Image 1 (tube, rainbow, N blue to C red):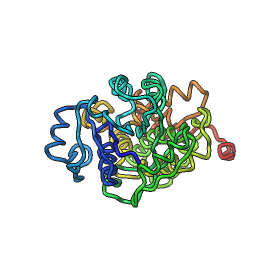
Image 2: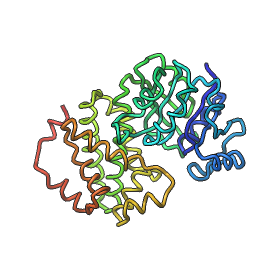
Image 3: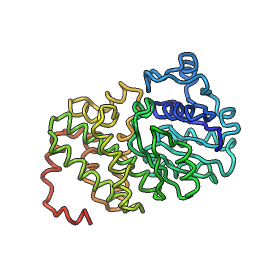
Image 4: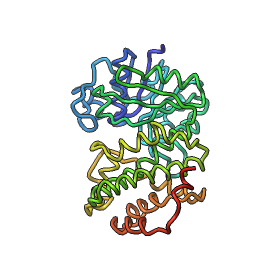
Length: 335
């Protein structure tokens, strides 16, 4: 097995994966874009901002410069927020070789282009091999070696199996799936539903409402996914239903937390200014709104989340408007 991996992005998930791969005996490097914080990580060997309580082994090289970090790597793991993927990748163009294996663990849809992370990688880097690793996986639990299952997706079956082998361990089980579109969209759009779940919890709407939200949210995700070329069955798997449940119920969920604060009366600008953590669902809401209109997909939950986040709509009124939509049959959505 190749032994050299560079993880781009020293957030919670990037740090977690670097620690995980190092535990497996791989030569692992971790890159962060802020030199001052990289110095902090080197000195204290703990990502106190994004993954407190998890030690970063001395064997992991922590880098701020991209060119030396890229030297001799076999796998590049992209763990930066989707909206900055392009700006980071641009600096790699001259330093990556054709055929490099790139594994995206970013979850989102680029606002300006409506591209998924794997598409952004191809668009910027050209002839690299791309896979996606997604599923229900809070860094706080994976880093502590709690049992987790993920799915590796790629159009290249060999690469999907390589990624499966690369990340699999006694605490991390990895499946493969050829449906990259479905796997990526499931991981991206569930964050929008998680914002809605936070609003639901923040308003104290109860278990019935939460269960209904998840069920109808899953249908909405699949509806958009199929319109964009995904297989409907993919959304019943780890990167669809599995990731949706985890994100909508866990106390670790950043998107759910945003929704809860919105429900309590905070403004989005105040919430974003008060945290360094990225809630991808906020920006994905914009992209999904545009995609739904472009492809004539009915996405009422996303529409109401969009109006709450960006048009200052009262969350309680958004819930009422969802409940009072025209009656319909459930069967047409389950076919």
